[in-house]
Image (tube, rainbow, N blue to C red; front, side):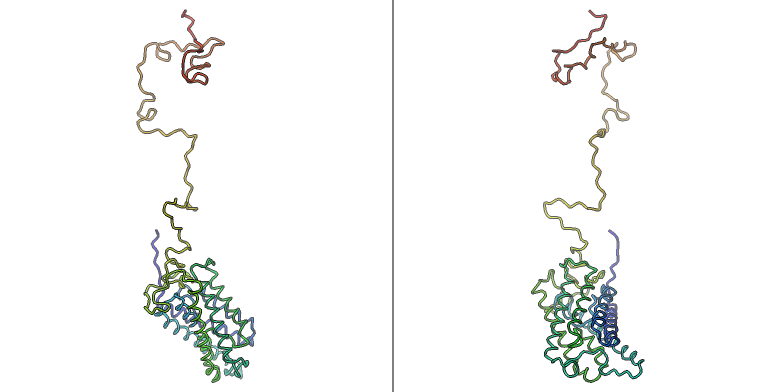
Length: 379
């Protein structure tokens, strides 16, 4: 077994991964909305692609949440301990605010730019499209719940989806959500995204932020609590997660893949010992072990090969070829003895004719029917 060192992500690395991922999400997603004039396809695909790209980039370190609602859903769904929530949410808010500040500063490069109402902020009511506040609350709650159900399902260790396809499915889900809700609320499903640009978009946007914080958290809580009820955990929840506030263990995080971060501490989870991914099947009691399909085939004995001689058998080095027998003088083949008598024409050789002992037709070796060969000098 090879000696490998497991590089467990530190708290600082997780903070950096979440802050960077959230920064990219808000900067590029909201930036696309600002520069495209709110084009649905451009904005929706940009938000989705940022999730895909950053989940592939840093998902192995932190799981690629980039969203306080996703973090809450992961905790309530049994995938993350409560003692990690603070560091995640802090990093996401920092990343979102840095992205909002960068957009605010850079867009002032356009002459006459006014940030008030022009920061791709979320909206409802008279300050937006006239969409009622209760409808906006319900829509954002529903969209966030769907988003979290998708995330929890894709990262479920029982899911047979290819490991590399997880971030892609989540990114496409976010794009799908934008297409369905941009004209109503500007699509939040992410408090860090709403806060990051909302604080730079004027008083009206700041006043409306409460809805885009409350609704995503409510939808995430619904999904996180109902997913195990509807579909089961599949494995034991992470210690200190869900409705248990035990705090969890320090070694919850297992690096190596995006999905491994979503199944921390679960026996049989992706990236854990005993998982169905990359682990050999368990041998059942009383059943033969499954052959290794990649092992070299075992050489079968040649049925036509001569049997190997054991030490001490005749014919080996240092051993007589045949057991020693007393030799009688004058026997054929000995020194001074006459050569074996050749049979006359038409006569069979001794021991080779029909009915010879051990031959077909005379298995008992009797003399009945045997052809006798006599020497010419004998009567």
